[in-house]
Length: 123
Image (tube, rainbow, N blue to C red):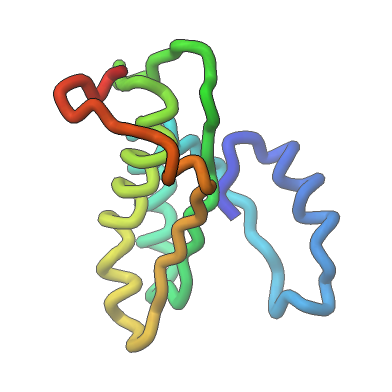
């Protein structure tokens, strides 16, 4: 379970029903707003695991105050889109090892109301 804060991740993990989860849940520090953090986390995953059966992308920001990521990208776009894309693209070799592997990306209904100004992705 990739999370920005291991401390908060431990609290979340403790609320998951053990009987429904096979094995243990490993916590991994991962900040989807930071491409360097994504590289570090995916390097760890690639070195530790030989395959991925399922990747669930579930991070998201909604209308934060104007903030830039460490790489200078608008924060909501960096987390909700670019971070998930970078994580998934790097992990594709592990996903490709399993026939029927899946990537699930969770989003909100706001996608139906929002508009993207393709000439100003920093907007």
